[in-house]
Structures are given as C-alpha cells and as structure tokens.
Image (tube, rainbow, N blue to C red; front, side, top):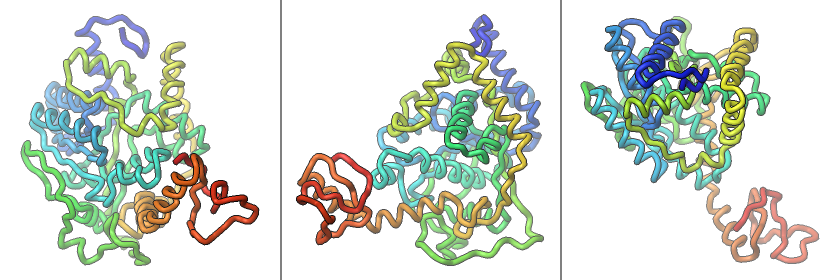
Length: 404
C-alpha cells in the first residue's frame, strides 16, 4: 500500500512508482541539467541512503550526464555518528562515488558533544542545524559542485513548517518549503570557504577522504579571522567589489513529496542498508513533539501532510518579505546579517568556555549545599543575596534552576 494515498500496489509497482515520483519532481522543478556536479549529503540514515540509490538509478536509467558525489558531516557525537559513518562508507563502496567527510571540530573547533557539555541538551539541535548547513555548503564547494541535494522528505517539511508557525518565524516559513534554496558567495569568499574551513584537498575517483584536523592552508593563514572558530576579532572585511562574480549553490530536496513511510518501505523492498538509531540528543528536541502530532494527523488523513506543505508553499509565493544578503564579516558567506549565525554561535561557545570555571565552581557548590540551586550568571563567593537565610537557600544571580 502506498502510504500517501493508501493505494494498493505490489512490491514491483510500488518501487517503480516511487522512483518515477522522484524523477517527476526532478523534471517538474527543473532541478538538474547535463554536466551538473551533484553533491549528495549522506548521513547513513534511511532518507539519504534511499536518495543516493534513487539518483544513481535514475542517472543510469535515463542516461543523464550528471556527476554524483557523496558528502558526510561528522558532528562529533560519540556512539551515534561514528556508527552511522560505517553505512556511509558502504554506500561509497557500493556506488563507487567520491566521498568526503567533514568534521565539526575541524571547521568550528567544537564537536556537538562539547557544545552539549557547555549549553546542556536544550537548543542543541538549533546549533547542530546551523553548523551542519554551513558545513555541507563548504563541503560541496570542495567538489566544485553545482547542486547540493539533501534527503528531506514530506514529513520533515511539514515538521519544519509547523515549527516556524509555532515560533512565529514568518521569514523561515516563507522560504523553508521551497524545493530550491541557495547559498551565495562572492568568488574571493568562495576560495576562503574552500580552503579556509580546515578541509583537505579535493578527492578523486572512488576514494573516501576525511578532513585533516587542524589543517590550515596558505590561502587562509594570512587572515585567521576568516576561519570559523578562529580567534575573536573586530576585523571587518569589506564587501566584494561590484564586478566580482557571485557563486550560487542551489540546495535541492528531490524527496520533498515522499512520505517517510514510503521511504522506509522502499528501503525495505530494495534491501538497502541504513542506520536507524535516533540521535542521542534528539529526544529532547521540540521537533519530536511536532513529529508525534503529525503522525496522529496522518492516521486520520494522509493528505494532511501535503496540505501543510501546500499551504506554506502558497505563503512563500505570496510573501514580499525578502532580506538583502550581505557578506559575513567573519567567514565570508552571504547572510542576512553582518555576522552569520554559525560565527555568532562559535563566538558564544568560546566566551562560555572562557568562563566555564565559574560554572564549574557553582555546580560544585550546588552539589554540596542542596538538591536544587540557581546557576548564577556570574558567581562571586563573597556575594550574599539580601534577605537570604543561609547559604543553602541563597539565590545568587537569578539564573535558571537546575538539578545537581
């Protein structure tokens, strides 16, 4: 049965129908052209594994002149990403496609495990999403890719739309559903992104190449502030001259109309290997609540998922709110603000790390003096709150309440 419309199909008809649906989306949206260099973002999960298989199949079936590449991002989550990368390497061997693996630690100086140790499990998915998007764009540039494709499915888009609605983020609501978004860079910034993000050289053939930790190329050492995760600086880089060419990297979603259940069923019928373990930190995410809500809606009527996407698509085409892009003064990517979100997060993490001894001392006091204490913004052992009866119930600084 096809989950999106509950149409009964045999195994062969279902897999053929699924492949033709993806091909129809590619053709209708005019996603790819001959001689395109297509970078497939893979994680080892069901969506990216199915996407890689279907694109290879469509290319062979219709004799398209595409060049396909695989790109994986290692966020630095022990016990999760290191296991899923094993599936990624199997994909590379199966399809004999060039593969490159980029690490958060090498680009942003912090792994996600380190980030969570700083900020806790709340909002860590936001940080991971910002880092992943920029890492994928920089990795695609290493292949000189003309297109970057991701495995986002219809369920993912519906979750994102509802999340932006709940947050009142109309700008993201307007652009989040589009099947083709763009990353934009000036040519000098593009070179900086390619060689200044602590990445190794371009890989060739079917060889998988991981990034080299701590690598700095000669083109970037002259301006350490251009590196994400480099030392903080007040240096402001001038915008690219008007005559400079601009590089556009479209980000595409060929599976945007495919239901998650259809993808799982297709992977089962095709006997595709994929990593099915949930991320260590995702159970605490807000998206998980919306995912459960969407599953409940789907049981009532599967069309609800597509209706959510279509409603946001209508909003996108009728929205007049567009921010003018400008160059990030730190890393050179185009952004709607003077400093991109990734650079702001890295700077915040650096400041947090510099003051971490204050929080460590406070947590020791919390453990010693009581079950629950408030973590102060700034801890001063000599400071007492007016009206406090004892050290055990003193409320210092007015931070968030946290368990020992």
